Length: 74
Image (cartoon, rainbow, N blue to C red; front, side, top):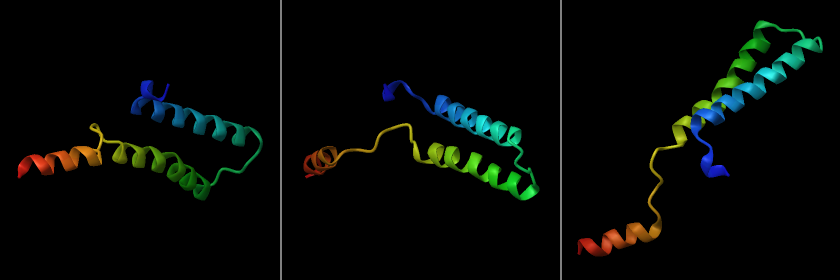
């Protein structure tokens, strides 16, 4: 199941959840100030940015591949 997920769908799901939470907070009467808006922006943007930076296109080589490549060089 997790193999079918891609970055774009995860970022979209993250944004959808945060919009739903923000909507629920606004409907429940939470005051929306500049400080709260800045905090929401940081919470909304930071995790997807980190995920996109860390999630590379190619998987890292495993130890067996590194050791095999070192043995083949000699």
